[in-house]
Image 1 (cartoon, each protein chain N blue to C red):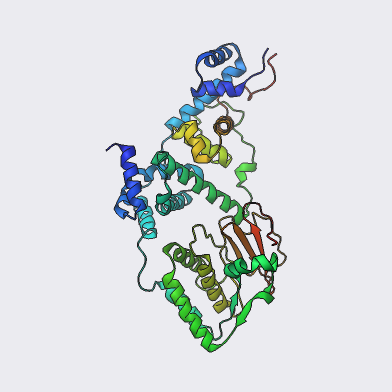
Image 2 (spheres, helix red, strand yellow):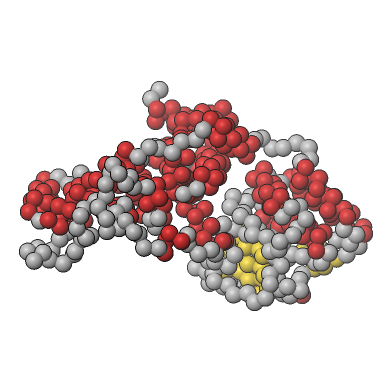
Length: 191
Length: 260
């Protein structure tokens, strides 16, 4: 049985309460879920919480898995939405100001990026992206999902996914100190 | 001179284009410095992200996560958990248990003929030793009958409050609650046992306190009910003196008050 079929079989059995099947499903995908959670939550403990919550949701809602998409796509969807929900809750409940680095000028923004001597903190830069952009970039460029899959996961049209990915990359480039020597883009005409 | 279609260039860098569009984008990259910069930005960011090491769990972290998840999906508990015992102890120590019957169930019953705002006057309050005993028994029954997820929410909240009901208001993430009335009832009982006051309690949904409908509450809050049940959102606010709760129902989707 190939991997997608095996996933579907496990999901069907988990939906009927088969814990062994659910455990195997978790075994197959927990690294992926944790990686998404870590990139989204910016905090290891929160990523653990998100991973746990994702799999609890998967178990609870296994019966609602329609089978129209791959199990992995569905898992990405649950994981991403769990993270986004948790981030929204954090914002509301803590009512804390953003971390200082959100308000500080990015000192590296106008400096050329030296991949050897000044290795950019990609995780930090990712963490500073707006959540919607971060989700799109993580799913697209780290996990290699298609625009259609990401649209399904985030429940937005493909055009919106593309827009978020592109804008997210541009923001990342700025946060990483620009990959080019010249200032960022000018949308006006060239001279 | 041309207007830079940066999204076209980004699509090109992402490998989304074919045919004439791809040719057109390639020409722009070759002939325009701004377009070339855009192209390189996307390619390099993609490359950096594609090769970024994946965060990984250690073996012990993996074990902990699995244990937590598998505990959460364990079959229905038998017997009485430590938090059930603590709850029952709190309930038993309360000489007179005031039972304020409002909350979700009553709201759902009365919303249609009482308008959108109910007050404490609408609540039924009873107090007696016999009644307290009966209530303790009912609470035990409720906990035994409660689903795993609801019980987990209750226990986690009880744990967060140190089992003493301190730190009002409690904001309870009730995502996935199966039986909000039963859960609200347990919170009411636990809160009443601690506050020695008539205390209504309920279930806060994931949207959090007052966030969705922009409710404004003056003064300190004692408790809050926020729950979405069958498309009806219920918000209950309590003033600092534990009296005069205001209960408002909204349509969950539109946030408009339900008035009939």
